[in-house]
Image 1 (cartoon, one colour):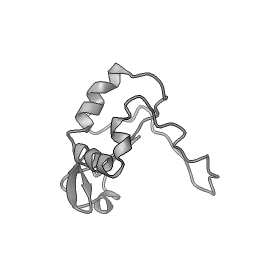
Image 2: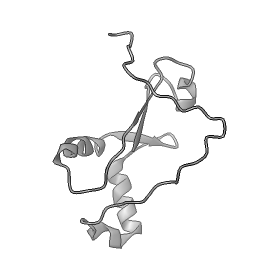
Image 3: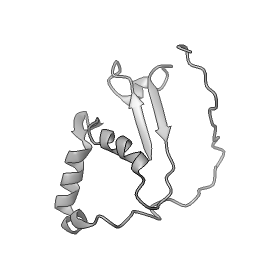
Amino acid sequence: MHIVHYSAKYINVSQTLDKHDGLAVLAFLFEVGRHNIHLDDLINHLLKIPYRVRNMFVYLTCQLNAFRQIHPNFANQTTSCISDDFRHTQPLNLRVVSCSKNVQTRGN
């Protein structure tokens, strides 16, 4: 899962790309398995956070309800997990993959 945040003082993501305080990207890897109560807090908060789609704020709960209307059989599926929903490893093709560790911010 990726969560992309950009500062509210910028109009869109494009304006943040050359700013030190403009953009934050969080990435998470999950293992498919049984219900994990430790993720409940995170998931419940994600449902309350608006996100932008074509300059409109949308809440995930609205998006989920729309999805369930389009796919009515999905609404009652509580025990199935989405799995194997990934793209296979791609060649790097001269791209650089980097990782930040122990990053100090200006506030530290």
